[in-house]
Length: 181
Image (cartoon, rainbow, N blue to C red; front, side):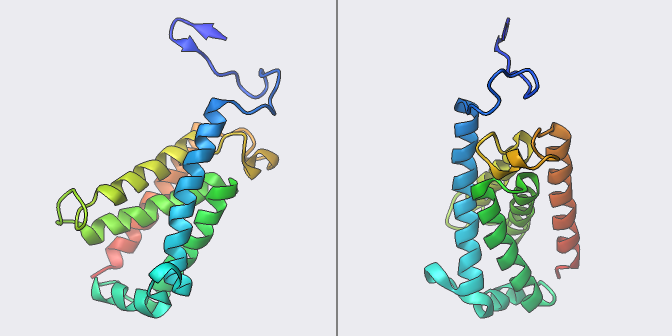
C-alpha cells in the first residue's frame, strides 16, 4: 500500500501473504540473532566459564566488588538471564521479554561502568548500543521469522507489548540498582 510517505506495512490481517517474510523481517532476524549471540555468550562466560569467562565464582567476586548484595545469587540470576534470554532472542521466543531482560541487564552494566567516559575500554558505548538495540527489538517485535509467530498472544506484536516490556526491564533494573551499595 503506497502513501505520500512511501510504502505502508499492511497489518497481518490485511496482508495477502502473511507468511512471506520481507526485508523488515530479515532485518529484525539479523538484529535479534546478533544481540542474542552477544548476550548468550556473555551469559555462558558467567554461567559456565566459557569463552574466557570467570564462571559463577568469578562473576560472584566481581558483583561483590561493585557493591551488589547476595553476590552469588545475583551472579547466578544474571548468568541465567543473559544465557537463556540470549537464546530466546536468537529463535524469537517471548521476544519482548527476552529483549527487556537484555535491556535491564545493560542498564545495570551502564550503572557499574558510569564515570569511565563514552569510549571503550572504560566507556559506555558498548553497553549503550546493546541497551538501545534491546529496546528497539522489544518495541518493534520479532518479525515473522520467529517462534513468536506461532504463539497466539504474541503472533501480532503490538507497540504496547514492547513498551510494557521495556518499562518492565527498566523498573526491574532500577529495583536491582536500589539494593546495590
